[in-house]
Amino acid sequence: MRRMIAIAVAGLMLACGLTVTGVASAAAGRSPQATVAAMQPGWNLGNTLDAIPDETAWGNPRTTRALLRHVRAQGYKSIRIPVTWSNHHGPGPDYTIDPVWLARVREIVDLSLAEGLYVMVNLHHDSWQWINAYPAGDVEDRYAALWTQISAEFRDHSAKLVFESINEPQFTAQDDYASLATLNARFVRLVRASGGNNATRLLVLPTLYTSADQARLDALSAEFDALDDPNLAATVHFYGYWPFSVNIAGGTRYDATVEQDLIGTFDRVRTSLVDRGIPVIIGEWALLSWDHTRPGIIERGEFLKFLEAVGYHARLRGLTTMLWDAGQFLDRTTLAWRDPGVHAMIRSSWTSRSGTAASDQIWVPRGTPVTARQLTLNLNGLAFRGLWHNGVALSRGADYTVSGTVVTLTAAALTRLVGSTIEARFSAGVPWPLQVRGHEPPTHQPSAGTTGALTIPTAFGGDQLATMEARYADGGNAGPANWTSYKEFWTHFQPDYTAGTIVLKPEFFAEVNDGAVTLTFHFWSGARTTYHLVKSGTAVTGTP
Image 1 (tube, rainbow, N blue to C red):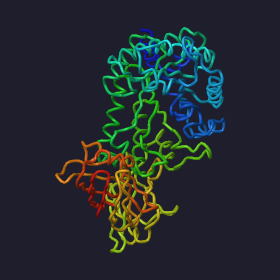
Image 2: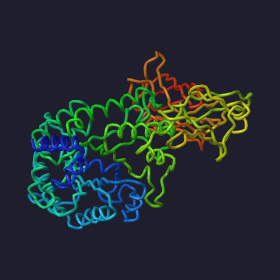
Image 3: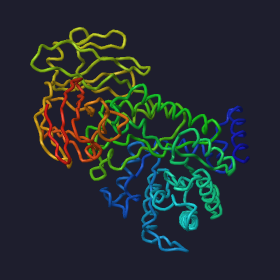
Image 4: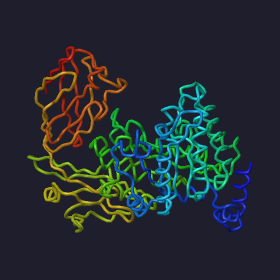
């Protein structure tokens, strides 16, 4: 009731020409809506304090003030600091947190606040390490003991510090919703009872699995009604349409299916929560398999389109987004973005749309006469301003023509530009990169190996692999995920352009029957090749 009264008062004041922020200031600081809005955009200090067993165990360097200052200078307003506590406390009944660990968490929180960032702290991998056993054993006592100590440590900290109850909650017991509701309610009561600034601190509650499925959202909405606390926000995570997020089932492109999944997710969140006065933080977002250590799973241009769309659709619906960065975006040693163009698209999406195109690649066959190529632009409400190369505008007419949203590059221009990158510029946002790539038909050589790994010698001819299909002689799907013929990039197969090979992995052969299997390799130029396997026990042979 208090939350609904606050919302009603805010609406009345808006009608009188006053802002919601002004209402909050007159009452007791910012409203939860204003706080969550002020946290946009956010960044995750991933695989750091959540790493097991300690801060640097998963490959990231020790966190410094220089890193946090850099994050703030790059335009981020908030930082989520995931923390795994399970390896850093003593036995029950007290479950005393290691004072050295707690001091380190506090140090990073304080450094972040000193840089002007909002900060969100949680219980992270504890969710699947032990919280998932609730209601069995001592889970609730342990959970309460940890939050009691964390609350006491930070009770007098700035209101810019936010607590999140559990990361991606999941339970082995049947009544998942009741378990989460109980733990969320216990969390709210404990923090509020600790006093100080915790009495009104913004607390963030997740859906089950931090999923945006309708049933999960409805259950969390009911929790908010039952808690009747005026300083709460909700959180979900978003990693996109799963086949596209990991490149399985032919999910290579940011297509209409991927976009409708995005729009449907964000619409459900807005309708179920935001429109009811509950602010929402997308506490983690990215694509699961965009990773600098596993290049090529997600094609760069398709990823750029996804980034642009997430920024736009979240902004349109008033959702705060916090990028999941476990080191795949920002190199924390050099403090440089691993792909500056990727971050430029993310940053632009906070305030503006950007134009894109059907592809960021234009493929030009080698050894045959070059012909004109067409490319469809995605204007996203903007105006096309032309094509540029090395800062010089290409000639409309001589180098390219435009008809509606279709750009046609002439044969002469393509011949001159093969091996270079041009860009399409629009009336706002960042330019769209276009790689003009020469290629020859890919070819393979015979191979012999075992189910431990089969290496297929491959001459890529400048082309790049998009995906792979596997079928038995009767047409049935072969290998893992047998609901689709398309296998998972990198998990089941992996190209090595330097070595000139495609490696079929043991994870693929683990679910392949003895006999003949036909592979179809799909390349980004549009080329397809066929390769035939014969498996007998652990022995495998292959021929083109």
